[in-house]
Image (cartoon, rainbow, N blue to C red; front, side, top):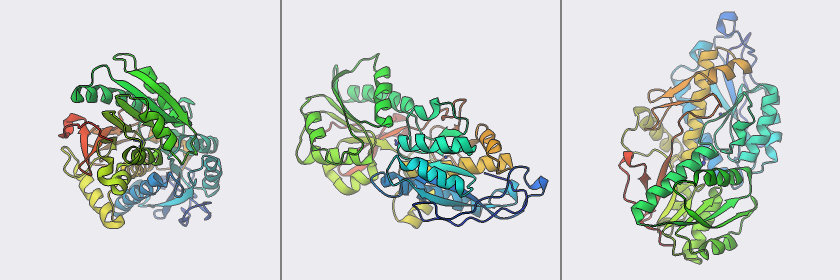
Length: 425
């Protein structure tokens, strides 16, 4: 999950200034929100528009996550606006201004700077940890809160920035979850003393993920027979696939980004066949993998998100899911729900803070919660909230396996998971 992964304000003194939505790139539109704290009781406007900046990858390889993230955010904004907007701010409506980081970490600073210049109220987004790390250096100095929806590196929150919140699993949470899943899978598949071959992206995400997984790999211990990194800019994964397949490990594990898992799955099915019984493409987007590879991806394990039919789904999920399908003619993925929850978190903070001031919004984000009745689409946990270190107290984590050309939930078992099948790449 990137997760990839996963999942980011406002009263006005005087009028709240309208800010036009930029379609991407440089955050070309100017303007923002005039409010600086004090809310309606201090003479703020009773109507207007609140602009949230989405700093993320709308183009490039990581747009596989950035675009759906924006779509989920739009559904949340539509729901909030239809329900009366931010009531404590006179019914002000939310709008989202895009800032495209182009799947280039160097653009994190550039686009965050553009967002601050556009006077947005708060920021959410980010698919690459290095992009988020650079961008949040800018927004922290400006005192503007940022909900990180895809950058899972622990470093994002370990710097102690008061304005930065991780709305998805961080690397430690994700690594511990995958470690537990390997134990579950080995038992299900009858793998005694499993061996593991690991490939990882040499970015903050991949390197920290590896370190966190190694820290978790103590009891029980899974023997790592191969572990190697590759540059973030890698596009030809044939040598990575060949090296993993030649390890003869029971379990193949990629700690990479959406395109990485997709390309490796293609390589395993087409050329570098393996005897491994488990293939974990941790950063892959299951919607993209299934739609592009179909049955060729059978057995692949990826992160999963709530889907119709899953037990325990809150009523709000069904409505949001239907609206998403109607508006975008596709299924939401993990980043869709990260964008969705980020906007709901910011809306809740706006209601509580009654202010557009960064410090007020930051303080409110530390206190608000999302429930099944308000903004939380996940069966488990029932409540989403930030802890003292600004990460989720309990992050959602589900796993899917491609079986017969379709994605099915296999973990956790609380959600009527299907029986896990061995990989046959």
